[in-house]
Length: 130
Image (cartoon, rainbow, N blue to C red; front, side, top):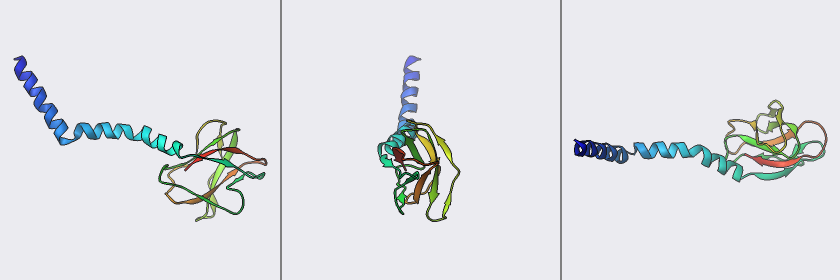
């Protein structure tokens, strides 16, 4: 009886592994932490101008394939919005607590031109991942 149950278990394991079902489930579960690490791992430092704009001057920065969102991590708590070149529009201001990653804009396409607008006057520093 035990031999049959072991053989049956071995047969099921072979079918599952051979079909890739077990491997697919494991790979899917690992996507989220890896994607987050890749996104935040590619973050760059920013320093806004005294009016709260980054990049400074009449310039835009571009999203990458590393992140699906535009994320900010300011050194001081600020409200931030994202303004897009293509549409000449900005989303609403979002609160971004100091030292915490905040999604400033979600589901943004790769290669999208944008700039950050921090509410109020004063230089702001931190990190951005997009």
